[in-house]
Image 1 (cartoon, rainbow, N blue to C red):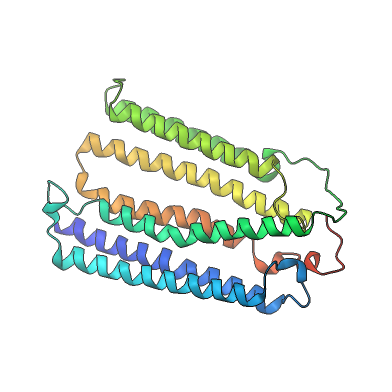
Image 2 (tube, rainbow, N blue to C red):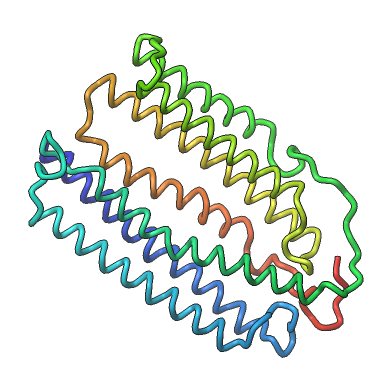
Length: 292
């Protein structure tokens, strides 16, 4: 259908710009602002390597995202004017492979950035190993960082996704059927998210210098992100069941592209809007600062 192809072009363009231009630009601006406003001469505990290393890492992040941005436009051009869609999909519609594979490539620099943060925190902990620390002994509970309504809503989304899938297939539970496989994947993914959330909430503090208020704010944003992503996954699985029920395969590529954008908005968008640089207490990274 020509109209569904046009919708995909719009959705895929949004996926290209949002994940490989808008958010990388936001993250780079944030990193550069921190390096310029809180230099190692005044805030030595914030850095575990020479400042030049951080600038090189930022340059690499920028270049990789620009390359992926360019790749996205090449893929879009190929899908619009070059590729025979029947090669990838029997019905001749745009294959879900394009937004799926490209979306995974888009997430690579973001994953690398997250891993580099883990390395940074590890070096901070190593440098702080001999420091006498004052610890906030107040134990956080789940409802201290997220609202009960969000938890209930996430559980309702999870149950609704499974029930709708069963309804779409006349409540037939057959091993190896898409309904059972989706229920298993959805359950395992949510259990994984629950495990990550439990570690985030009750596990060891990652940043040894971070203030209690900043720690709570970041934990709260991380927990909300996981609940939002769980709900997004439930919605995605509902669309998969609706696909089987109403035979709307021609929308698969559009849904996948929109899903990737939703995940980025719910994760990076939520973190950037709730953990703002101007709200962080950087005084804890000064040489004479007491660690909390």
